[in-house]
Figure 1 (cartoon, one colour):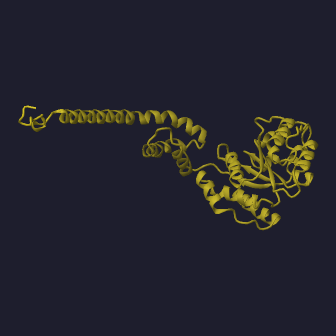
Figure 2: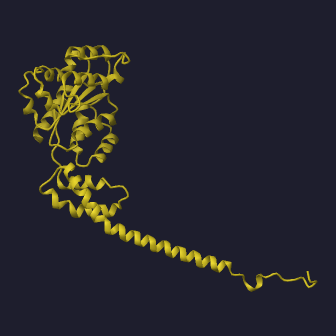
Figure 3: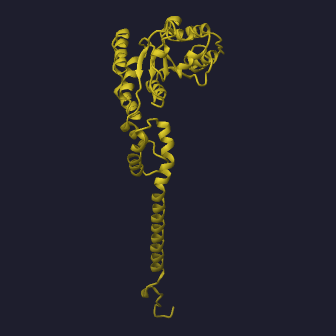
Length: 303
């Protein structure tokens, strides 16, 4: 799979010409936000290239809870590129998908105030051709949970059309599919163009530790939480690599782990407050006792 991803990057470079290196500050910012995903962030930045580069079809795949959808959206947002994000969990039918695409792209379409209903794929093509300027920078459609497209009966032409929207519309429009299985699951769709693959592998133990350590519970002591993750996590990662499941497992364990520390800290805080109060009481008592020379003394005239 890694060889396939590297081959995809070489194919993308050959098709679109040499893309400029992405802004190093953007790449650093993204990789710092997403531990263990430096390679995938670099691939996505390379495939997207410059704003007016030809939009390539991209296929992002890998196990669940590996950051695919979030990282794809974050890359587009960090670059400031126009894109539409639609999850087929919500848009669970062709018309819902087409309408959601138009709604998401509305800020970048001309005459965006006018209502546009998409009952058919031809309506989407017409809307994009009419709404996107020929010299517009690349616009992408990000379709999450893309394997659900394969379950839509009578829509065998929808997937091939989505992968070649640039040709159908005459505009610089590309599609990013996000899915769990590899591309073999989509090969049955006749005429589907092979996209550029980006594979997200499962997190290893070190990456899981780095991610979970950053997810500090409210009010938690950073050093204590880091010790907790370091000591408890290895007990579970041998059989579980899912971030969702690990978070669910660790949350109640953390509450039990931190309880003695919270009790001790509360006792220390109470003791400190008591000592501070006693010190202030003694200080007030000392300041409130008059010295012998502080009394009033007459001037000898009895006044």
